[in-house]
Length: 117
Image 1 (spheres, rainbow, N blue to C red):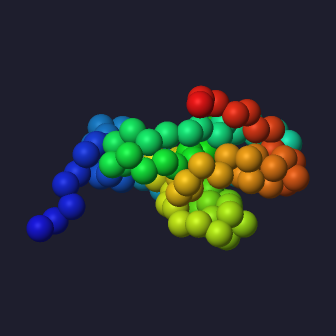
Image 2 (cartoon, rainbow, N blue to C red):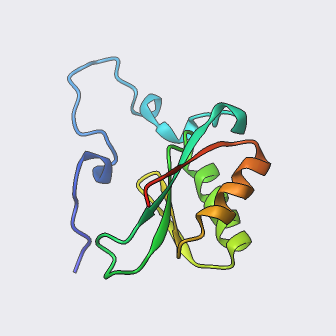
């Protein structure tokens, strides 16, 4: 079975244009420059909804390209010694490890706020 398409982002973002001067390469969002950590405001959430009762830490608010987001997610998972993933611009870390995550992010220069429980 093929993966079900959910929205325009899943289709690549571009569907149709009547503009004769339209350049499909100009709309590539992967070229987004990532702001410095001191200019970013992140939120560390606690969640268990939709995960079969399993507890996770969700980091929201990262601005920048997907490559930098994946790199930060990988580093956080390694520092906490747990698994996780990066989906929809959010870093999902298994377990309630907000204290470790927040401590590491503050050391890296990010502004982090604890949200929820």
